[in-house]
Image (tube, rainbow, N blue to C red; front, side, top):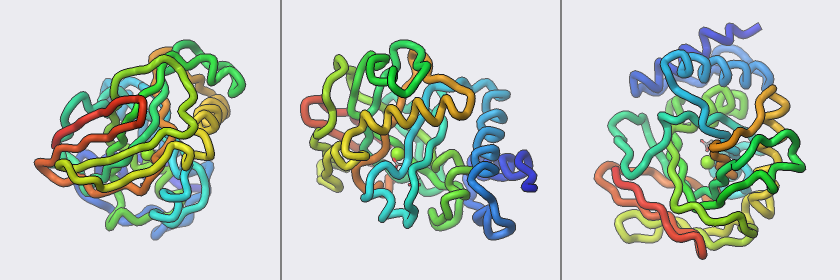
Length: 247
Ligand code: OOG
Ligand code: MG
């Protein structure tokens, strides 16, 4: 049986020391349940330092991401208030950050079943996620990345719009005015709303509910791109406006 707390502390130290570590599975195999237990223990460490849960992020909900990272299953992680990047991200505190476009949902009321998820949405926005694998070379197996809170590091979103169909929104990522990724929200399980329902399902399965004020990131529609220092990034979602962040 894996020492869940020791593994969580190893990942937590790596993030705080800004130093990549070897994959956990290089030492001993980890099954999916143990990997999620490590993820939760890591979140617990952060809660004890005053961080508060702020939402759920879904991962590998698009083929572009599965292909980029060489995995083939949907995963999820947790967001905390301290991960929210209002307008800038200090990349010196990150190991090898990448950025990707996201569709973000704002939860308006507690979601007690996946079927309620869509009607509980108070707003939709274009968003971004900054990933930072705590593993060397940004390489991992599925249990490794689950334990590492799905590589989550920072996130942000643009203006909230009233709930609407976001099943086919054109997405554009620009760094310093240069287009680096384009895609469509349709790449996210055919419709990000499916990812939202999945977020409700996995949260319930883990004994949590999506709560008012929480954010759900549905997963990137494109591969992630390296996030350099002194960069200006703009992520645009057709009809949803844009969100900008500097490093
Ligand atoms: C894992 C996180 C995947 C997404 O949107 O697909 C993810 C990673 O790629 O390192 O956040
Ligand atoms: Mg993501």
